[in-house]
Length: 92
Image (tube, rainbow, N blue to C red):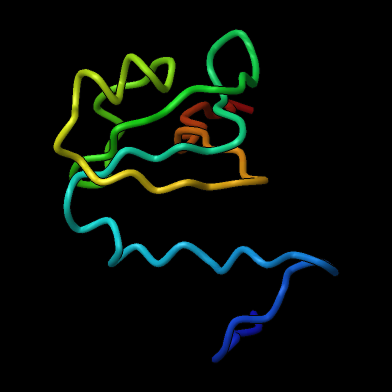
């Protein structure tokens, strides 16, 4: 695994620095370009993150109206999705 000490673009022209988890110590509204929902990726949605968990998901305007005091963090060119846990097993 390679560790980067300073911001280096992941691909040419990428100016988006990595998201530092410490920045999310307080609840935030994350506004990615795409949000992965059960039926697929959608645009113009926002996610409230509190304590490392998604606590609200919906259209940007609805989420912003419901949580007016939270800071917003724009995430252009990013897909936000819940952590996937593969809990299956094989008996053979």
